[in-house]
Image (cartoon, rainbow, N blue to C red; front, side):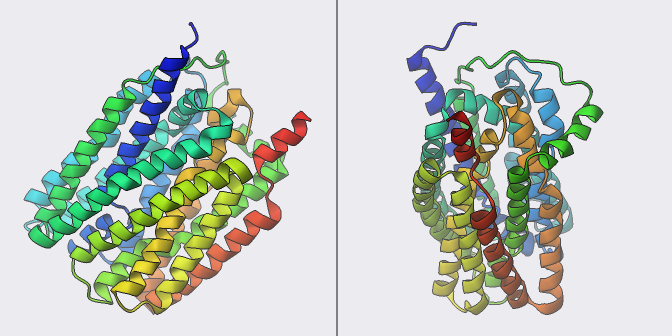
Length: 418
């Protein structure tokens, strides 16, 4: 296969960035931090069920990668595999638009079940495709500029999302429940269609020759030894686990505002807007930091922002103070979006990139499943404030763990090269 010509490679970088930007635009229109929990609450979901939503979504993004990586590493080309299966990833939004429009009033329980099933479908397929998509991206975007790539792509998505957040505010204020939510899901559908169109124009850069990896069972058995033989990787994964557990309160900020502070549905749009402003500014800050100090420093900063969000929520009592919570949460999301995925590309050798992406994602999946459920149980039993205190303390611990015990893999690679 001939090398991709530079102009065509530059287009592929642009198209991959546009794919990511419009995907994040869709995520802003149907935000997992604001709109999805609010929709579930309006359908009558308990705090435990609302806590289950981010748990299932996070596990969906993370866990399938460990099973997909074995298959992904043996694919000569990743793009056809991605294009074929990502359609299932994107069908959830139009289905949710129809369900909200037709079933939310007459059958809220069925609608809630569909919400859970469709979001699980989206994230499980997305998690299955993650190693292939990141490997495709790594071939097109060189290591020194990956922080800026994710910053520009995510920042552009957040900027687009600001207009979407204004639309969310208008739609929910004007049409309420459930029609306003249906229109938000319909707008997200349009965004993922545009994302898919850009992805289809990517020209895949050739990768190294593929080699047989043996059967899946042998492959899975090998993964623990990779972690045990690399102490820095093990410490990094511990910090990731602490950080994921520390975010157990983030799915309840919007619920707290609606249930305890009695805010209207239009507050969902206001807080989405505030969060997106923070995500936009945070994306460029974190991209700059990641390219100069590495992704570990960015993840440490993200954990600190998570701690600050929960700490402010402890005393929040009105719209202004809750807006500060969502500013810090938006900064936390920005740091995660810029560095949580690409750091996996730097943890191991090029020919095993999907494996290290899988280790980075899947090792924290069980904790991502359990911690929001624990958060929901705490909120139901003792209230939201103890939950926010716990989240603030654990997230702060994650930030210290990153800073004190983890070396950035990029600096270690540079040291080995000298």
